[in-house]
Image (cartoon, rainbow, N blue to C red; front, side, top):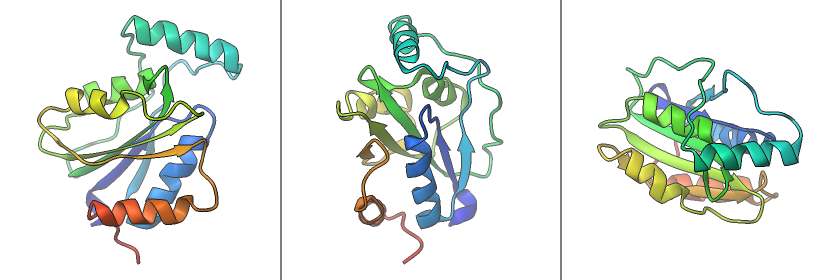
Length: 162
C-alpha cells in the first residue's frame, strides 16, 4: 500500500509536521512538505496578520516544488488551521495537484479553534475525489495522539502497520 500514499503537509511551527510523521509511521507513505517559495516570517503575530490578508484575498502563494503525482492514489493533506481554514500554501497545492479520482485524507493541527471550515473547504476543492473523514490535533497532540491516529486510520481503512 505504501507506494501509492502521499502525505503532503504544510507546517509553520512544526506541529503539522509531527502529525504527518506519525501518519508516515502508521501507513508507510511518502512525506512531501509543501513549502511556499517565499517562506512566512517566523514572527507569530506577523505571520497571523499575513495569513489573514491572504485568506481574505484568496491569495495562492507560489510553491518551491510539486511532487510527481502519477503513482499516488491516496493523498493525505495536512495543514495548520489559519483563520478557520487551511493555510494558503495548502490551497495552492490542492489547486495544482490533480486529485481527480484519488482518495483525499485531510488532517490538521490547531491552536484551540478546532477544524473550522477546513474539511468542507477541501471537499469543495476536490469534487472529483473521495474525501475521507479527517483527523485533527491540538498543537502536535499529546501522549495519546499516536493511539488516536492509529484508531482514525483503522476507521478509514488505511492503517497498514499493526
